[in-house]
Length: 284
Length: 303
Image (cartoon, chains in turn purple, green):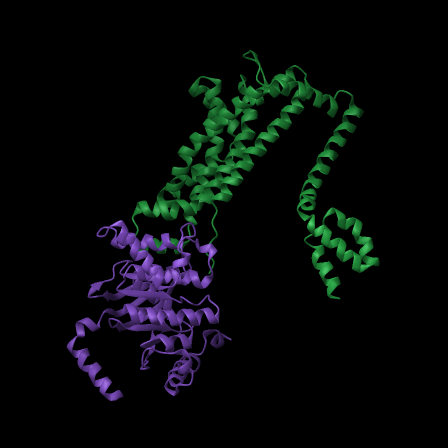
């Protein structure tokens, strides 16, 4: 069964090579030039992401996973190498690669509705009328279950709700790629689990391509099609890539008992704590 | 035990007047003390208000007392009572006008406020956009930085002769010094505000690919507003300080001139009244702007 899947994948891979390389990262290097000197953050990064794939980037803090995400977002420019999205060079940030920021980054003077509308208006304002834009905004709010909170300001809602508005804002722009930088990092465990489940449902519905940065092993295994494990910085690179072949829809409680799930989990833990022991420990 | 705990807990939000009476009783008989606490809690709105008003009133009474003692010892200094009588006389007709140099205190205050409003308004008109540009464009910040650093510590009164020279009239010259003293805090605070716009917001703007106009109206302006209002508040404070001194030098109508005129008449009670009036007007201006600033301050993004 599994082998069949594999051969199928390979056949498809050869057939639609162009389409499969939806995001294509080639020999990317990233060096930051600061006042204290230059810092080699990333070296030799090669990665392709298929359309509709869910990728997580995992690694110890300071390994440059956020840097890689910002490179894909276009918020940073690589020192060397090439990043392509849908066969076009990533030249800068764009609504087609929308970002969910770690600290939600909602504008505190706008309501939830207005925060989402800001993006919707920018992307669809030229082609659609007011009512269509409003419907899009409402639909995004409904998708994350926040219809009731549309006229609230960010300081009037909980952290989990803020993060959901951030996700709604990103999704409402109908991005080709959804980039998430530790979106649930600042939330408590229960809220985080709840939002992970919601994200799984939303992604199943929208068929989005997702690249997500995380430091949570369970989160990575639960959500991903592939887990990209990064070595420790400086000059971090991709250490291993783990393909997660758990059937979807995935269910948290059932997976807790699943042998395959534990295997994936162990593999990631092995990489993080055996092969790439925490940099702080090495220094000590 | 729990009752005692409750009293202790209740003690904190109700440090009200009745508690001072109840305190020794609570040590002896805890049970009735709890009851008393509850009544104290019920009258809390009044008691809280009382505790708010009591310290300032005590302070004022102390000030008047010291004043009375000093006045009684020196002899040539008016007592609070004499001053109060003078004030009642003065405020019974604040808007009389018998000549260009003899007008009611109301006219004088209004004349000063008008100068401040014009000088301050012009400073806002020039200073806030300039602050935005300095904050947004590094070249301009490097260009204006040294000039601002050099001119900011100069007393605005030093600019008064330049104003007289250029405008050839006292009134515009006074407005000119107000303009000069108000413009620095507005430029600096606005520029700092623009530079401190959280990078997160700018990243949002970049990802959403917002137009410059949208960035200005939806992101820059709202996040700079609290800084800007701080600048405005600082500016109005100095402007009100400077106008008194400027008017002493320029003459005409105005509270500063009035103080100087009354000194020439050796009318000390009027000088004291003027000091109080200047203080009260300054306080009102400050409070108005604090209220304005509060209305436009938003919770920062916390991670």
